[in-house]
Image (cartoon, rainbow, N blue to C red):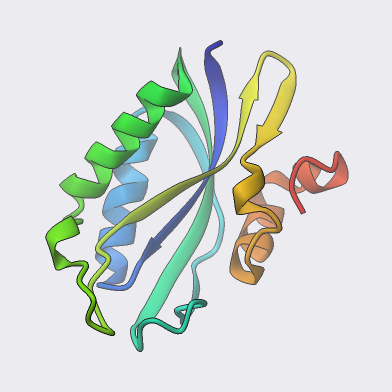
Amino acid sequence: MAIKTVLLGLGSNVCQDKLNQGILLLGSLGSCVVSDVISGQDYTACSRRTYDNVCLLLSLTHANELVDLLDIFKKIEIQCGRDSRRKTAQYDYEVAMDIDVLAWQIGDDWHADGRRLPLKPHEKIAAKQVAKQLFDWGVIY
């Protein structure tokens, strides 16, 4: 079934310009509400780099299947400079853009990827700014 609204988590450890580029590209797919930028260290402790993160609630102009959206988001990551060849076994690597699907709406019902729950602390803060109702309804936590 087609998705009409999606809650995304975006992050970059390169520069805030990459984050802004991703937001603009996603905004071309519909209307969006963006949280404040939350900056912090890598929660996995695999990098010394500072990450800039936001959550974005995107109401799509055209509904899409999840598999098609994942492909679109992967292409946007690449447009923003994401290069999987830069991810190595080394401790520190660049992530120009990372887009994670946190929740999505099909019809009137919201769904979340159970593997992403509970949300990370920075995701919770940002998601509450743009989609507090999803916490109230128990979709995300």
